[in-house]
Amino acid sequence: MSMARESFLDRIHTVQDALAQPLLIDQTLMDIAHNNRAKILRNGLMVVAFNALEDFLRQRSAELLKLISRTSLKFGDLPRELVLAATAEAMRAAHTHAMIASKQGDDPIPLLQLAAAEVASTSNGPLSLSRFALGYNGSNVTADEVGSMLKTLNVADAWNEMTRLGSRVGLGAVPLKDAYAQGLRLRNQAAHWAGANVQPTELLTFCQQAKAIALGFDLLGSRAARLIHDSTSTYAQRQRERHADGITIVFVNHTGSGYANHREGAQRPFKVHRDRDAAWLRAMAAARRKYEGVVERDRSGTAIRWDSTDCP
Image (cartoon, rainbow, N blue to C red; front, top):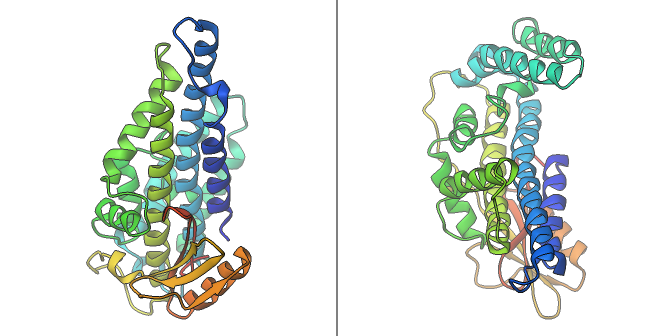
């Protein structure tokens, strides 16, 4: 399993679990001290939850870039925007984040040296695409930048495609670009405005939407990265592609007595297990044949974890 995905799911589920704690729930208007503590804790969790998603987008992109780096294509045959991102944008972003590191008292030289070596690899190989190519335009990743990250990998209509995937796995049909932008606003208010008071419902809603965004980004980005990696012809002049309809899902659905492997669109499960891990492994084995996604859903039909066989 992807380390980026595993870390994100651990962090977001921890935030969701924390919201059930009495310390985070407001009491009566007379309980001023308790309510003030709860407000501060909720504000802190909003920052943690958004940062978990932001970190995932960057770290998962770095994993996808590692896969693409192993392609047999020449660097100039990659999507044109990826060529620019891996050179000019990577250099600019590395410099910006080196200056941030320097202001924080860290030595910026190792970061700059690594980025310079990665950019140099685009001309003399072996290719090693820099993580700074995607997701490092600023201190935060904006909604427009998330769409641009997938666009750079030759994905068309990224946010709408992510919304469609999220809806298909039980994570709601709210436009995810708007959800992400609202999450960033709440995060910035919680971090910088003394009067911020993030509500438990806002946090719970964002955690669900964050999973939908992460899942959609992951499945689309993984499909695009594998197609680039496996290609034997140039991507430089290709039109961007929509991938959501081509990504089918194998589900692990919680039932009253066990776990059912169910392929999306099928009327009946193809296997039922008593053991959760056995059901997951069976789903992964079935999905690998056709590069399908694997999604586990709880009894309410909501996705709680996933994997990609395009780029595990």
